[in-house]
Image (cartoon, rainbow, N blue to C red; front, top):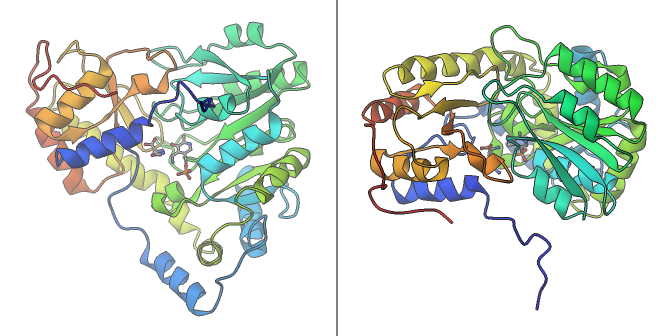
Length: 394
Ligand code: PMP
Ligand code: GLN
C-alpha cells in the first residue's frame, strides 16, 4: 500500500474553483490570472528567439544576460549588490522557486513559521520535506503580524520564516515596523532564514513602496526572495520566475535546482532579457493595476459585499456577512452556481479552515469583465440556508 507523502493535501482551491467556473460558465474572479492580452512586443521577441535558433538548453542558472539584467534591476531598485554568478537563478515559476528554496534548507523536524491566510503551496512544500509548519494567523481584519507570539515561538529548530508582500490573498503590504522586527529576529536567531514571496513586487498601490528583503543588507544576507514573470508581464501560463538571495543560500538552491528542472525555457528567457530594456513595462504596473482595483471597488459599491482594504497584488477580499451565513466554501460555490461569478474562499488559505465570511476576488481583469461581474454581484440577494443545489466541494 502506497503511503502518501501528503495525505491531508486536497486539490488546490484554484483548480477547484476554475473548474467550477467553467462548468457553470461563470465569470472567473477566482484564480489569479489576467484576462487581458500580454505585450505583443514580448510575444514577438519569443518568436524572434525561436527563429534565431535559441532553442537548446540554457545555462542551469538561467541565461547569463537575463540574470545580469535582473541583478542590475534589483540593484537599482533596491540598492542591493546582487551579481549574476552568485545571487540569482531563473526558475520555472515562483512556486518552483519557493519549493526549491524550502527543499534546499529544510531537514526533517525543522520548523517553519507560516502566516495564515497563506498562499496554498507553502505548507505542502514544508510537509513533503518532513519539516513542520508552525502557523500564526495574521490578525483579522487588518491582517497585521502577531509578532509577540512569533517571538515566543522561535526556537533552535525554527529554520525559516515565510513572508509574502504584497500579500495573497489580502493585499496587505509589509510595513517598516515589520521589517524592523525581521531584523531583530535574524539578529537573535542565527539559524533563521527568510523566504520572501515577492511575486507582486510591482503591484503596490496608493504611493506605497514595496519593502523587499533585497533592500536591507542584514536581511538579504539571510534571505531568498522569489519572483514571477507571470505576474510582472501578465503571462501566468508561461510559468517563469526567479529566486534571488544570499550566496551561501543560493549555492544550496542551485544544487536542488540542477537535478530537478536543470534549466528553464530558453526562447522565453531570451525574450524577457530583451524586453527588460523597456523599464516602463514594469514601472507602470502599480498604477495600471490600482486603476483596476479602484474601478472594481467603485462597481462593488452597488453590491451587498463590503470591501476589506487591499494595498497591492491582484486581489481584494470582500465580506459577505450582510448576505449569508454560509461557510466561505459553500458561499463561493453558491455564488458561482446561482450568480455566475467565481471567487476564492479565504478559508482555503488556513490549515484549519478558519472562516471569517470573506471571499477573494481577482481584479486583474478587463474593464468589461469587471463590469459584467459587478452587475451580477449587484443582483445577489441575502439568502438563508440551505444553498439552492445542495452542492458542496470536496
Ligand atoms: N506566490 C504567490 C503569493 C502567488 O500568488 C503565486 C501565484 N502567481 C505564486 C507564488 C506562484 O507564481 P508562479 O505562477 O510564477 O509559480
Ligand atoms: N497565484 C494564483 C492565485 O492565487 C494562482 C496560482 C495557481 O493556480 N496555482 O490565484
